[in-house]
Length: 306
Image (cartoon, rainbow, N blue to C red):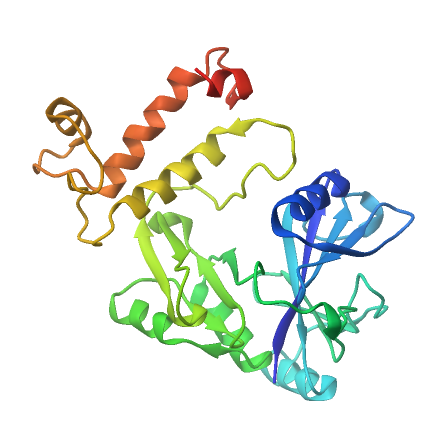
């Protein structure tokens, strides 16, 4: 049985990120290294923030979500499945300390995956239900090939929502371990996936076509700099517009958002007589430029006050 237990990030300032997670998600610190790496837990996951530095020697050095880790019952079984699928694949030994698993593999798009038979240093006594990590998403060039790796090598399971995407002709794929859903996101389709707050997580996701081609998933202002970037503003505009469509009929009705006749006419850019969540999102995005008085691409506290 495979269980997602570890998420690793690269960061310029891990302490700032940790402060965010502590303040808003109630996480606890498990340990830190002399090099500035910090490990925390949400009660189930080991969340490790590596200080970005050349000594890490990673192939991909962009800040943000870097790789995940899976707890398994049998390392040798995983190695066997990996080498049968990828005879030339590399299996790298890791230290097995708080910040690492026991071995490292790479998925078809060269993202590291660390594997361990341990719980990555998270004691059972700290486990809690909420708040907790429930959803992890990757951008992927070939979601189908990625899905094959995570199901056939690691033992995760494709979930019903993924089969539905197949029937709809969409490229996104979902797999899960029964606790956390791992999704892949295709920027070229302009589709964002939002987890519903109730029900079985692996079966409760909505596929919503928001944003502009090339957009990437971004977190909130977790670096603690007190500013909102254009990307962060777009993310919030997309989420609020989707949530406004309470009956999920693809149109924003008066009972959902009060709009004047002039506002509806301005937002209805395709002239179909309705305001879609996408049009509402773009309308809200237009407000970013009005608020950004100094034109630096960020909204500070004074600008947000208007």
